[in-house]
Amino acid sequence: MSHARQVIRDYVAAQLAGIGPPVYIGKVWLEDASDMPAINILTPAEGRNTEFARTTLAAPAIYAEVYGLDLEVEIRAIASTGILDVLDDIAEPVQAALAQDTTWGGNVTMLRLASTEVEITSDLQQPTGVLTMSYAANYTVNMRAPTAPI
Image (cartoon, rainbow, N blue to C red; front, side, top):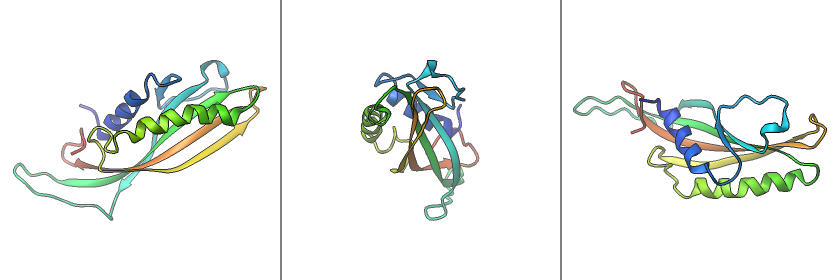
């Protein structure tokens, strides 16, 4: 069984597969344009959500906690001109796909697009851009068996 974070990352990757460029989970990028455009899914941070935290005892006993998960969808592209338009053209169907089910397959209890950031460089002799959509999500997990959200 997979940890709840992995279940969520896999769900997001499945939702984005086939809507545009290749989708990766946790890809480490080298300074190479051969694998762009691409989408990369990361979960850089997680923490106990004290606002929604709860513990529940039931039969069998479940020790449940609500966690806040930061999930980032990175879109990387290279273009000789119009790099912002290229990034936005990829971002639009990504954002739409992830808004279709705000529970992400029943894996999260709260979801919002928290921010979008763009970084542009010329490291590869052409404008290279990274558009990062940061999602904030809550999920509940049984701390004694953290293999799936509950």
